[in-house]
Amino acid sequence: MIGLAVSLALTLGACGTDAQPAAVALKPPGDWSPWVLPAASAVEVPPPPRAGSAAARADERAVATAVAARTSEQEQIARDVARTPAVDPWLERAMSLVAARAKDPPTASRNYALVAVAMHDAAIAAYHYKRRYGRPAPDVEGALERPADPSYPSEHAAIASAAADVLAALYPEAPAADYRQEAVEIGEARMAAGASRPSDVEAGADLGRSVAARVIQRARTDGADREWTGKPPGGAPRYYSAPPGTAGRPVSPLAGTWRTWVLSSGRALRPPAPPRFGTPKFDKQVREVVRAKAELTPRQEMAARFWAGGEGTPLPPGVWIQVVLSKLKAEPVSTPVATRTLALLTVSMADAGVSAWDAKYAYWDPRPENAVRDSGLEPRWKPLLETPFFPSYVSGHATYSGAAAEVLSDLYPREAAVWRARAKEAADSRIWGGIHWPLDGSVGLEMGRRIGKLVVGRAQKDTPGR
Image (cartoon, rainbow, N blue to C red; front, side, top):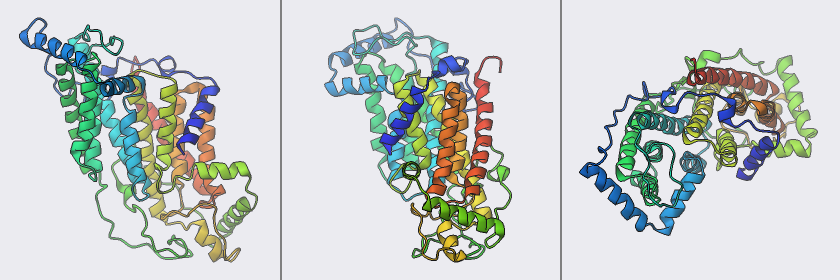
């Protein structure tokens, strides 16, 4: 899947790019709108040691010592951090953790957004104080080119500490110390490379931890920990039931009630009810899905498998994250712009997941594998892909992809047609895979587009004059 995601990013790059700074005129990062902080200045960062003071001289000596004692491993870490988006290792870790768990798309998209928002708010808070204090980067012969931005507080330390603490809270299967040690190593590598002083890193790490605490508090109160004690409204053929031969429980029936980022609630975009089993409109969809499998082309099968997002993968929102991370590596942007890009993308998909799951469990629409058999058209019919353990209407893939494409079309406007075409392909792939009805995709895409537009509207606060 990763290779295909990279291929998609290259396809986008080949059609002409509009790197984000040129496409969107932005305010200074410290003036951008945070997601969990009330303002970029909400977490107080004390001034750095006064120039010429004993503390400042000790800072400079510590940098010189770290540079002289630099290990090859530290140099590699520093170069990797400078070369790739600072958000990359943490989102890669999040995707690995998602892939290691049972398939749960709304929980995955929720967690991706929490990690990305923590990094975004930590970065813009760091840049607020960089501008306030204006402390130049160390003037030493290090492993990296001397940073042009002020060094205090370290944005890399802030991002790493924020992400590490949020990941530790969301995925306690690994000791919290493991995540935090990764953050410490990044700070030490920046010092060893001559890019940061100890006080820069310490202030950034403290800032990141403070931001993470607010994100974790939001996560504790967003409703995702509530247990479902209800029952399905009925069984097959009218309502969703587990695929034939299985007895899996429905996945995240309460996800539609979780707290949202830009929507007023998960039910804000709830669509009209789908056609009922046994009606002419429903029977028409049954025939369309059966015909789609019978007439499947090699290209359609490849698309269906690419977008499948089954267990053991980072799931559909992770595919979009992989595409964007690949693009940011190919077309580097500043650290704050990278955090902004991923925060906007993941927030849109988090709300898409909540909105789609609200519709799924409002209607409990049956999946094709059950309904085609129950209709009598093909009693032994099987889809190309494995049927998920949650209702059909609307398509989560389509809703995620519609939201992602709308946000990315705003950030990279020259490629808007390609982003939207890929979203349409993602929606159609579920019909080709035999696990969704055509209406699931069209309605989900429109819901996702509406969510994406809301996120774009909020993002405009970061532009001059807003």
